[in-house]
Image (cartoon, rainbow, N blue to C red; front, side):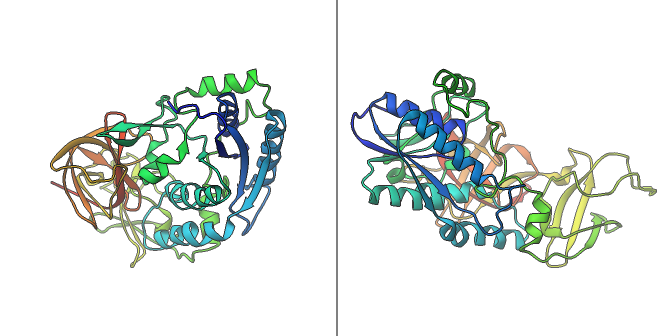
Length: 369
């Protein structure tokens, strides 16, 4: 757990939600000099139907008034656009499925925000992430949050030693239930506020409609792996490996139709083709080996190979046993004990040693052994 440092200044990223509110409250109780900061990082097409920034700011102001701490506001929209959103669009255009939360943490919360806070004289920043810091091999480590249903270490694997030295995770040792209970005890207005599930800083939107504002897509064919055309799609870039919903096919009058659900097995963005298979556990959806792009490590030095560890290919996945067999400045190679379903290029593969997050990398491709 984080340690008390009486009188030291912490700038807390206030999102307008219960997690950041309780984080600020716990830091106050521990004797820190606490300042709240509300970041506005999106204004390209603010729409009350989707983007709740105005309400979030009002909630953050009310929380800070209750806690009697100052609240600053800052606009990082330019940095978000240049360092997160442009990359996000580029990835989708090439047929990959990026994770905006990981990009946002790396480029905004633990870079732009951290640099800004330190420039203002803060000793630390704090966020409402469900994660913890610890020690592994005599160095700071990133640990899973105590609540297995809320652990967010997967989204934080790009943090290194310098970021961890300057970061506090005040609620990482708590269950979500306890966080809400603490908010209720303190009379915080956000105690029952629903958790955000939308795109980082952009809000909850109809995803395809949103992307269509920035990327031009064309209808194309949906084919089986045998080459039979069985439907049409609205743009191959919109779909991800393993996706079931939104395909608009089923009940085909062909000999090859087994009656099972259809899933995206692969896509050819250059030719605008989507390839599908039937059955949740179709062999084409499973890969034994995963190659990632440039890895990052929480510790100062990469691990010694070969390394038996666990990994996740997506958030909320149970830890999967694997063997890290190779890495370089450009990639890692990982072989899983059990084949992994729906490996999606652009998503992240994150490594663990028990509760310690070791690092990870963006998935380049999945291969068969």
